Length: 87
Image (cartoon, rainbow, N blue to C red; front, side, top):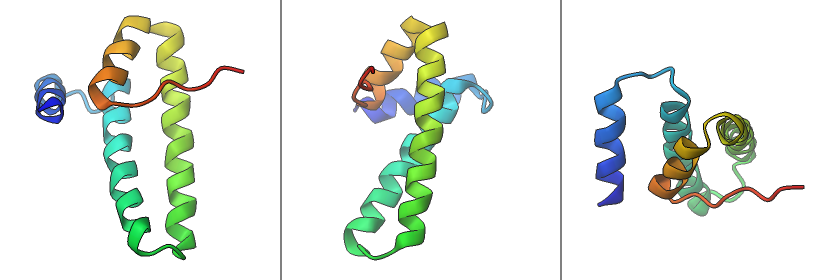
């Protein structure tokens, strides 16, 4: 239900360069790779790719949280992502 709402919102924008779309795309990739790693636990290249994508998404989310706080909160709720721990 929530995923359909997010997809419709993102597809209406059609702005693939926007931070929101990139975070959405990375989240889909992360979920796909995570499900792959449940069956192939020793696929170390996929583990490395997952860590790289997680880092990219984390950097985008930190930028979004600093500059567009409202958009950040909406995106976190829509994609069902936990907020990062602050240091």
